[in-house]
Length: 607
Ligand SMILES: O=C(O)CCC(=O)C(=O)O
Ligand SMILES: [Fe+2]
Image (tube, rainbow, N blue to C red; front, side):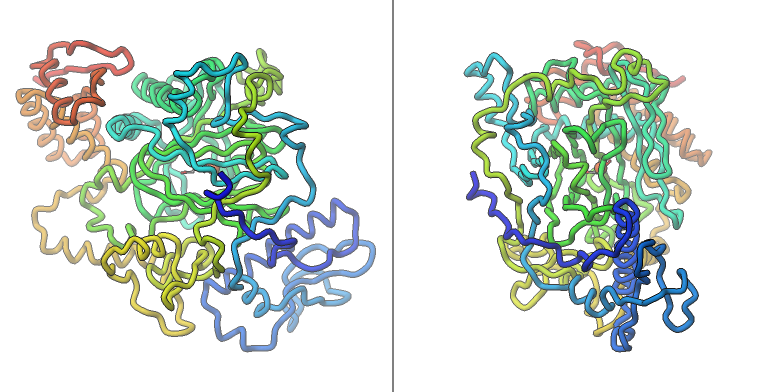
């Protein structure tokens, strides 16, 4: 086992941590230290990403004021020339000058996952049932054991000191099922757009609660309400997805112990992403108690990064970043105290941003991604009916109360971390192949054949694929790298040029990316699942609606005429066969048979 996951070299201290702490009460110091560290880090990294090469040649300037004495000084960046910001310092201390910090950020060093200094309770002291290691109290029957082994996982992180565990389960769901679930969730999910400070839609999201829970979900400034009555199709799709996932990841867990909520994310554009964060909302109690999370990916491939967080802020320790690609049907699990000690991140997909052929073309389902993160709400909100039943902290949380830790679990090493660089040194910088702007101006890259390459480019090189077109022209030294919006704008300009020559292009510029995607999916469904007569009638209606230029109506119309019986044997049939079976069963508006209650079949013939 251990040989599969090369353990990283363990170092005593992160190179980014500042030096000795200032005086003051512990709490105040912790606060000051955290804020100070964040300011330092942000200022430095902003400057780096802004390409302020020239400034580094000037005399290094102190960045932070630190008041000596009993009272801790308030944090503040100071301009030593006019001293405008922060309280007048009694003494200005250069915690670390810009050049030094920049060097430390770019430091070429091996990946490292620092071992915990203060330990969480060990697995012996406080047993933890992990999803992949879970066995029922009365042991495994032989057949069940076999079934379980078919669903393999790769351990990404096993840090017993911090009780942090993460695994990647590739290809848990069949692709035919993924397509099906993707389409339904896309069309029927109560999606809400999340905006960045600049007003860009960073992604769309929705929230699903089950098993009697009515809690809202709040993160950052956003509150995502639990819909009073989610559509039956959405509910059916979510329940079926859960059933599929649980039957493969944790088949022995009783249904009443399944997760009671899910957060959904929809990425319709390659440049959409999720910043560094932890799923540490109080609902899930992930900062205090072991907190399992099952994250399911549908649609386009995306990278997922997991890292140790700095104390008192959500920034990652750069050298600790674990990278994994999540593909259609993959599951990722985070367990134990991952949400307390680690942060995670979904970067944009730079190669697809630049390759966006035509922003106004219907986006094909593969470019978009839906992520469904199943979680257990344990501290229900005051107004949730489950609070009355379970109180603020249910004592019978299955993973803490039942089951036993399998033999495999106790054989594992106390700390190992998956490392794509295989123990080689990495530097935080942009990739010389794809120029990916993952976060604050770079990502971990290693040197391969005289080039600094990111993991995907390195893996591509190793795979022996043909040379790919460079996404960006080589930059002069010190020249600012275009950010993701510049790349996107360039892709947009190219598309507009193409548009000028394309008189046939439909006039749906006002449609959002998701509307286009929904429409595209709906049209595909129509083609695949309707008999010829229905197709014809609906196509007529679509054309009329299109003439009215009402994209919303168009989608609603398409959705209303979409029927998706899920034949029991659909996985064993090819897509074409399945479509034929559905179409045959639903000839000219009759009820299809056999019907599966989860999937309402609607046959409405337009007059
Ligand atoms: O899209 C993903 O894979 C992760 C999303 C996520 O981290 C979240 O919703 O909290
Ligand atoms: Fe998350």
